[in-house]
Amino acid sequence: MSRLPAALFLGLALTATACTSGGGETGAADSNTDSSTDADSTPATTLPSGPVEIPELVAGEAIDYGPAPVFNEGDLAPEVAESLEGLRRSFSLGLNALTVAQRAEDFQVLADSGDARLLWVYSDLLRFPLEGPTGNIQVADAFEQLSGTEIGISNPWGDATNRLIAWDVPAPPGYLEFKRSLFTTLEPKWEPLFADGADIDWRHVSWGGVLIDDRPLGATNSCARGCIPALDEPVVTDAAGGDWYPDDETVFGVVINGEARAYPKNIMEVHEMTNDVLGGRRIAIPYCTLCGSAQAWFTDELDADVEFPVLRTSGLLIRSNKMMFDLTSLSFVDTFLGNATSGPLQDAGVQFEQASVVASSWGEWKAAHPDTTIVAEDGGIGRSYPLDPLRGRDDDGPIFPIGDVDPRLPVQENVLGVIAEDGTPIAVHVAIARATLQNGEAVEVGGYTIELDGDGIRALDGDGNDVGAHQAFWFAWSQFRPDTGLWPS
Image (cartoon, rainbow, N blue to C red):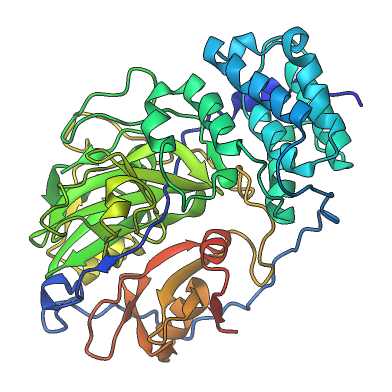
């Protein structure tokens, strides 16, 4: 088939990233970590005058990728294993060494194998520009031969990877070694992150278009080779000092031990990670722009043998969610779930406790929290931030592979994710909950009360304690919580 050079779509050198999983110790939810507000000192949210129209629950669109291709089980055939190893070894010479002439025979051996597990090899290769004008075209053609399907010419990598995730094709033997060699050719500093992590589904790990942020805590310099730089302990002002930020723009509001702070969305879109101190607690706030989710994780009060973690953006993604890591221990931490998925933190069974993040307009947030602080206009580092750094980049849906989707809602519908008292994950439709509350009606979900905070929403237990919830796009919440319920159902 006729193709555009696949390297063109790598104009997706997008500023985007994510993080990953583990299990273990969960901090006790006591009064010290309660991030609810004092009802006597916090003004009630002003309700609109007159009735508010409650939105309908609109269904999304399912995607049919057709039947999965046949894949083998067990070891690879000897000649296939030899060709895969030959490809892997070539990365030691750099991506530019992987020319069509040098590797054509190996590509064809994999394509002729009839083993669909090897499609993951082609998927990973398509993410990178290979040497020569036809390098990626040859890989795409081999993918089509082995899969028996046609993939799009504008973004062959995305189309191919979406199909593989949806089909749930297993990875071939030796896949992690192959992937480590390929990815560390681009960023050698990823090597220790690839050295562990049996609980990570490496099939779903991709490059987000930037490199690792390994600057020390408190660094204010940019990354010489390009990364998404975290903003550590930003300078803040009182609400009056935040008059530079328009009232109708979004902030991510956090309240810990009665102390409120607003993190402007435009600043978070640039940094995607903040390490801060609020209400006497250390927190890390990753913001995954791709999945519309800001979260707040407590990074203090861990076991004595766990060295103080500093969370950073790796430059890698997992199903369009940023993969964050701890700079101190070089451990991956799942952005959505807060548990360590590799390295010493996973060995220690670290599970970070979560505080709620409320997505609200700045005007309504400061009206509800007049004593709030807000990150300073320059972040305290002398930088200027446009109001819309991404310029609508994600408006038309996910730009990185996510596989199949849960069609109960459109992929980018905003939901508040909560874990019910019985352990069931539930997605609360934000627009419907907000409109219901603005009409003066109660919203009870999973044993919790949903309340307005500014013009965002949060979840509280029966004692008025914050239960650690966050807003996200539906596709992100539902793929990381596939057993989720939906309110209203």
